[in-house]
Length: 242
Image (cartoon, rainbow, N blue to C red; front, side, top):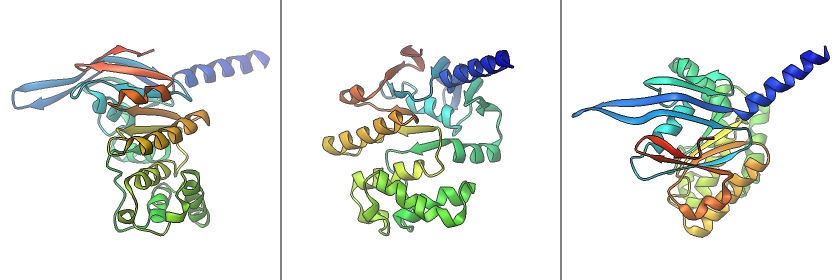
């Protein structure tokens, strides 16, 4: 019995060490001139609780890489495993359910629904996935808005908020279903330096609490917040793959 428990602990430790794993991932697109290979035989691991930056020049494959992790796009070949789930094998409906429960996504342009209040935007993912009892969802949304520092904005429309407040609301929405993983694509790209630092500190705090955060950024002065930096060039990881 004790041996079995030790083995289970070893397996759990291994899975946590490889919460996100890409194995020999290739992504090619058909373009007018033939095929464009955005990712070339990428191998990468991200462990539980890491705060990882993905950096590289425009066109290096950064956004394609995180689209593999979130299941927004599928690899041409290779394997994508997230929390032991083979994401590359899921169909469209399965992906939508899996992503809603396991991955929170934060975009550069916020993508809050303009006709819903801030609170309604946070409640929507819970409604979609049914992750919390209906009677608890508003209270959870308000608690998340409190966590990101904008609870007083709950009943406003997104257009009434500043860019920094909208990004905080987008982070709260990404946390709605309590996912293990947060993926952010240039989340500070439209923010001033002061607001960027505040948002980065928020992400760093979430990582410290145990969330795994993978962030695409071109802003080199933010690297002090990360536990590791993965550098892409021409579709290949040239540093930090682990």
